[in-house]
Image (cartoon, rainbow, N blue to C red):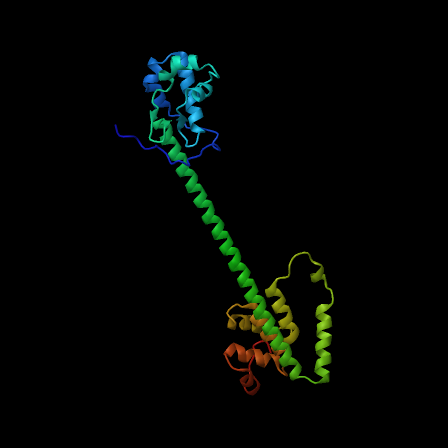
Length: 265
């Protein structure tokens, strides 16, 4: 007679699964309900529960001493043997020497598949979160590097184009920027765009809002680059003309040679 292979993998472990599915239609219509005695039916239900938490799941050991205990008979092996065939209704012996119940094995395989799908879904979600976090970290690092380089270049060019008087003015501006203000005491983080317009009006005048907006558009909405342009303009003799040249796409030298008409003038 050909031996039957185990109905579930050898490592099928559902001991963490507190609940076992109960197919009420199958149970209601099965022969066990009709032919088994009350004691045998009670033992059968206990054995189903025990099989669910055995390893492999859905199986039982073929040892009457162990089966008697699992069926609620304790050490009364003789009493167990009296209802053994009825209580083990539906169980079949497989090639690994254990008894398997096909219906419980079916439910066990479904539970294992669902658990694996949940684990895979969680792993994908975790990987996606980690990837997003790494991208944000890299973007933040790149922005910091760009801003530091831009500001360093701006400060370097500004110092080269100034004399002692220019340096003194720059120190005064730094002190002014460093002085605490009402905005600095605000618990809310400063708005970069609002700060851009504030600085732009300090450099070009209170009526230069339109020009600053054009500079921001010329820099494709990149606030740090627009701020760097305004800081560079602050080192020029005619900040408005310099920023106007940027709006028109001209170089720094062209800004000094070509006049710029600002509607706000």
